[in-house]
Length: 170
Image: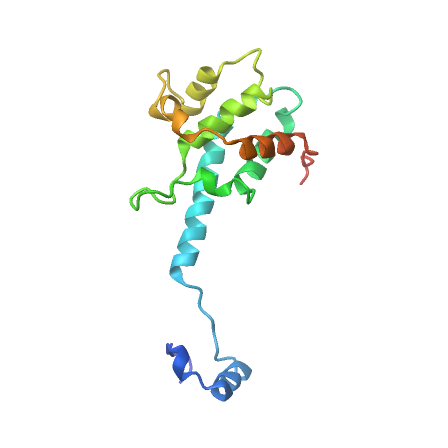
């Protein structure tokens, strides 16, 4: 029948290699990604975008050297294999995969200490308030001491900020 498609799930134990080859040659073989993998990737990307939106509130506070590429620096930090998991909660099922706003604030403070953000003009609290768009410190600032960077992460961030920034056209 034209227009009607059926999907048949076959357990691995019953695979018939000849039938699979034939289905492939006829264009009837499809491999479906598991929904869990897609959902996890989609949630991670949404989380990265939410973090980028959050830190974009302080883009104008970047020191002159980093002003043109501050978003790209954050993108590289959030997508780096060395740090990517530390920006998402993993402990409790109800919050697993959500952005770790505590860690975002810790990294912001570290970047301020490294003068990526203009430390002559802003304090960590001022930057936090701008990110949160409020006039009162939130739990993400007051509780960030539970999510401090270890030596390896600090070292990695130092190297990353001194690597050649991406051009604005990239």
